[in-house]
Image (cartoon, rainbow, N blue to C red; front, side, top):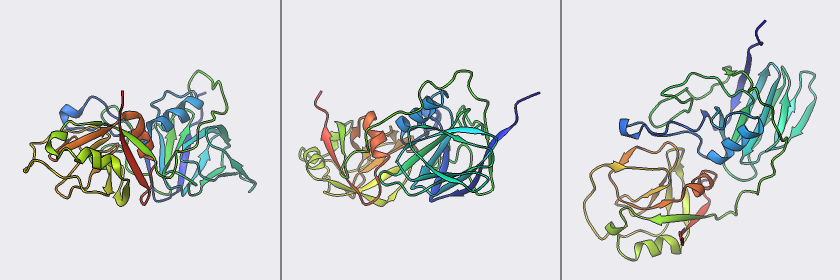
Length: 296
């Protein structure tokens, strides 16, 4: 007899929830961006706790508000932005659960996430991964390109794949708290810093920039000191990468995140180091960030 089909039933999504894995690398030459989890480290951690492959699909939840019900006994893990989380069983008994830990979600039980105390994006992984259809080798939702599964909706059943043959080795993974209210991101100059005045990079690193409300998985629009150009005109379209700081004529930079465009025509003054792109993905609108040049 085959194993019973297991699902997560979506009851509420909060401001935004999407299915994400580690994306579609290697397809930029076809005009397809990588997409995937905005905080890749948090997704990897949740999957490792469950003994899933690191690229197993999970839910990325922005600012909490998610509510799901288990169909079948499930083992889950939360990572990323820490938020209040409560499991309520079929008898109505509720218990709080933690993050970066293995948690059982029995058949019929519901899991509800509150608003994160810090950070922006929380990841809910299930042992076996979310088994939604792949598009170009990935289950990631790319909100800019419209690729991958649609955003989950209340009443939707998300299938869960078969559990791995290996078992989890740990049940808790302590991690450092999210960084201070004004995180510092390390940058590498270029590739088009020569399009700016010699002072522009110094200005970029001298004062904080505020993350505006006009930000999402595509990128973060920043407000702060203007970055002055040394050259007029625009570039032909060039390849873009996560972490690129592209500067339009306004002089206010945009920091590209997971669903960034494959190409762009504005000069890129600097690129945030890959390890700090995950940290940037946890910064909320209204917070301020700083930049510092890489020293080695």
